Length: 345
Image 1 (cartoon, rainbow, N blue to C red):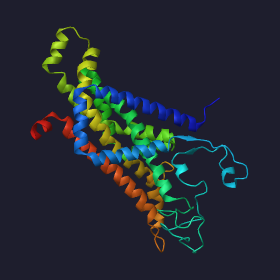
Image 2: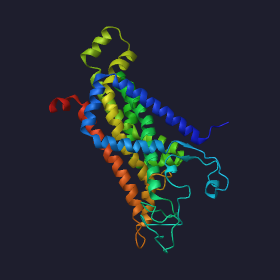
Image 3: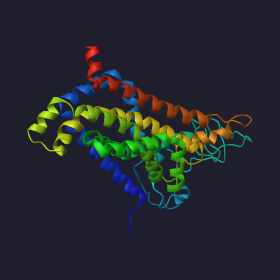
Image 4: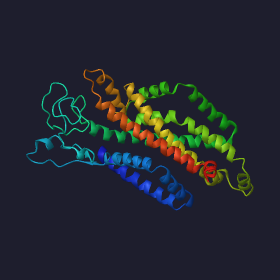
């Protein structure tokens, strides 16, 4: 018997939180990473706080359970066997109108009919009466899922191929470089659209398509850095002492690639979220994403008068996430790059 989807989501959240806690505990034991974390917190406190807020909203929208039916409650009758997340529970169960309503309005935007919840929609409602604030908060989960899950596909692939090409060289390097050159020569958007059309438009399929097309840049960096590291004196000393290739890669190469992986992850995250927005513009995005809200606004802006709040809410949320991620990436580069740290001292 298959486990219900909401229970799977709850299990994934618990596993993710446990993994993050173990990773944080491991990094805190290392003086270098402890110092880097303190320096990062000093440089970009607001950006880190913003990212933490987005992550919190995404987690709250990932934990859900089914309410028991309450006798004589007509609103709750439609929610039987329908799981509601913690974000959903911040709003009434029937928090929906018939159509558009402006922010904090008492009547419908078209027609002037009275609203069921007058003055309660802080960011208005969309074409089918859904609260825009509710939809915007739910979009954070989709954005972080796209960026996080796709990075978990692209980064291991880039590390495996990049380290293999840089360390072994020869035919392995030629094969990996041929793959990189082939993918880099194709228009990225067209390749992405083709993969989504073949795989489908579900969350897993879109993440796989983005992961297949998103590993090339990081792989180039990892390959180049591995080529440089393998010629250093301490690597030659490890070979003389009889260390195997696997041991050298695990103990010396991968730790020296950690800063590239962290910075590459943060930068890749921004590109992946924006790629989903482009897919939504083409009608291939994920349901509930900010890209879908922006895509819907194309027709809303042409109305008289224009419906602007759907676009404003999604664009502001997307801009805030991308800006925070880029600020943190810039600070990470300064903190983890020895040359930058030396210049600042």
